[in-house]
Amino acid sequence: MDARIKPYDEKMTKTYNNLLGEFGTIRAGRANPNVLNKIRVDYYGTPTPLQQVGNITVPEPRILQIQPWETSMLKKIEKAIQTSDLGINPTNDGRLIRLVFPELTEERRKDLVKDVKKKGEAGKVAIRNIRRDANDYLKKLGKTEVSEDEIKDLENEIQKLTDKYIKDVDKAVEEKSKEILTV
Image 1 (tube, helix red, strand yellow):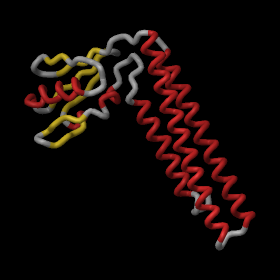
Image 2 (image 1 turned 90 degrees about the vertical axis):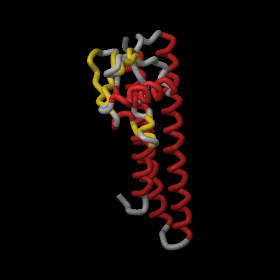
Image 3 (image 1 turned 30 degrees about the vertical axis):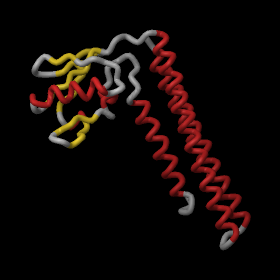
């Protein structure tokens, strides 16, 4: 790969990986510890990721269990979960916190699929914006030190990268949608 387009490939890779990370936080009926990735807990005045203040386990397919390393953190973890957009009420038994995920309704599943498609579309727009930036960069190069043929070749390479990542995003959207709709 040409060194001049490598940074754009890296940006597209980051965009794609970011999208996959967002898909990981969307729950699909089963309890998945990744839904807690965005939750921060006040740990002695510092917003800290939930995974760093306790042990998260999945004892049953629809239950997450959080056992804090310090019992004084129970209330703070409970509060952080309640104020998040998770939509689940935690139960605190004095030792650990349980999150029981309700079975998703058909309507909720369809809403989640719409959300996945919207995020996928945003990812594709971001990838196309990176392509546009790359092409702008190549046009500037064309005015100075590079031949038109070389510019055409680099533009084709950028287009192939774009097509590859768009295809990957479509595949990821399709897989996540299928996962959500599977009862």
